[in-house]
Length: 68
Image 1 (cartoon, helix red, strand yellow):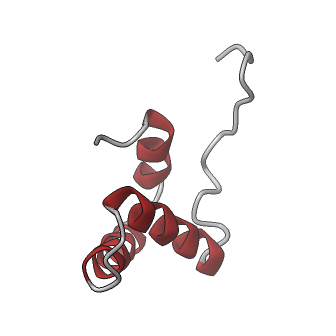
Image 2: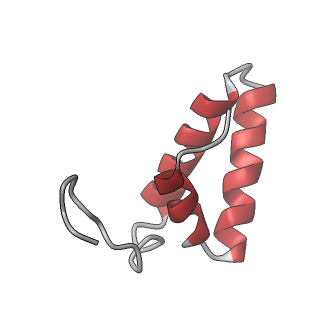
Image 3: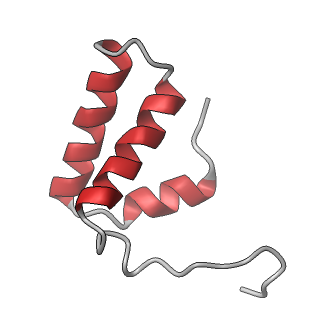
């Protein structure tokens, strides 16, 4: 299953170190934790945001129905 556009946009705002951390954490949770890939990736992204609250600062938040 491919990731939704908004997840891809969030991942694109991570720096190289954060992206590597995300991918490693997701892989560990998926394989060692026997989680579904989507679930592992979601938890890995939440963990990156929890440990680095400013990681997504450049990201602009839009509400549904807002004009782009």
